[in-house]
Image (cartoon, rainbow, N blue to C red; front, top):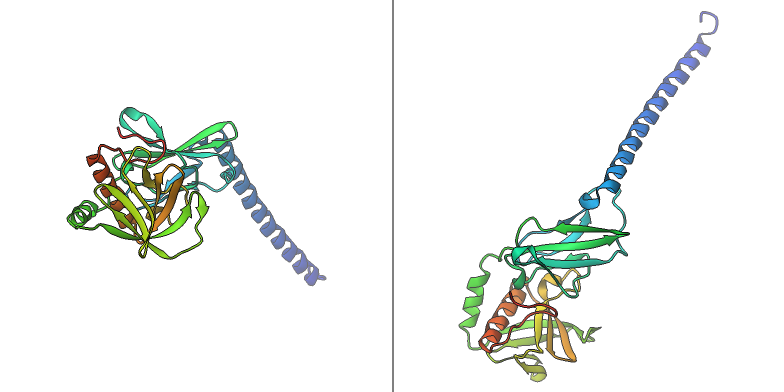
Length: 259
């Protein structure tokens, strides 16, 4: 040490570097052990892999998201949404097979579930509570129903399941006996309430689902309509169902029944 101090210093630096490297490797090893243990727990119990992001309120939109890092990719996994009706019975929401779903007035007071088929397992995620009505929506509906004409500005997103060529604004008229869709003075559809008519929130996913409806005017003619706001969308559904009920018609979505 007295005759070769520089060599000793070099050795001390090397030892210090080795200690730092060992410490880093030890931390990495511990982290890998934790991740392996977590993956093993997830494999044993897949119920905590995913959750629903969104508010349990009409006007919101739910999205299935991973709850933890390392959750499997479910991009190509089958998904089906359900509403839980009285007695815990589940009702399939026809066409609701995407990562997102926007509640509509028929969902108020009910729990919503999404079922994910991952390999041979079925994973179910559920809302924290029943869907609540949006604040002030009932008053808004009552005020609209006192008008002579109830009309909403809409944009046609799809017609008969295909993208609509024009993004121009149309007018949806909700009448006591019928629903009419027009562009300017040109009438696109004008149908009386009947058992073949369907009306519900859009079930095709997408960022605008909370503002969109699916309307089957009659067999062979359907539209996806985007409203200016989610309040207008939900009000239009509620008003149309009230008027249809006065005509002894239950106006629901495909595959749904009033209970």
